[in-house]
Image (cartoon, rainbow, N blue to C red; front, side, top):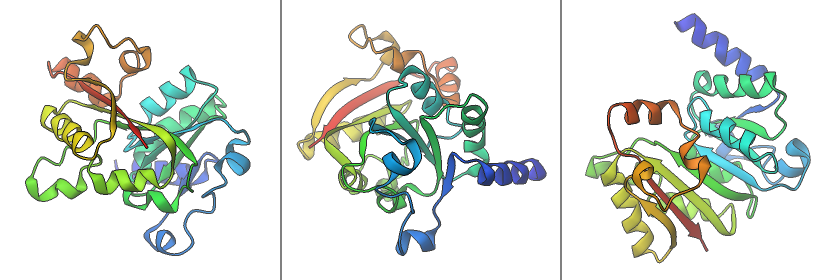
Length: 224
């Protein structure tokens, strides 16, 4: 198992669609592609969409296939996870996909102001302990980081199996006067949600939770 992980790490480092930002680099100059994703990697002006904590990249790949007129970047700290999505993108010559191995905390060192149009947060660790509120990816500390790289009116999407985490995220929206667009605590039973990208693309964890009978929550809101 360890050898397989090491092999995937080496392959990820060799893929042209994969990039890495270390702690040291995040505190110095940041990622060399910061502010240059459109011109130096994607070579188009299509909107850039991020998936935070992308895992194996199922959602990144699924969205990229469904929306070829957008660019997608999956972000995760684990190289052996993103290998799966990155390998699919390489093998299928998907030019609108990239992967970034780094911590979400370092996101401002990877993207410039107005460079990102949309963010997906798919089944993150809900960090249920009260002492870990600051680590929740929808707390205001993280949202302020997202604001620094998103266009005005940029969209954040959350999918989670944790209703307490969903409720917490809605409270953050309301308390900080953000604009809620869609909200449901039972995505697959809600007739008002008709976006096929929400129901036809599933991550490994979404399939796992759905099979166990967990309801899937969805939240969509705007950053102004």
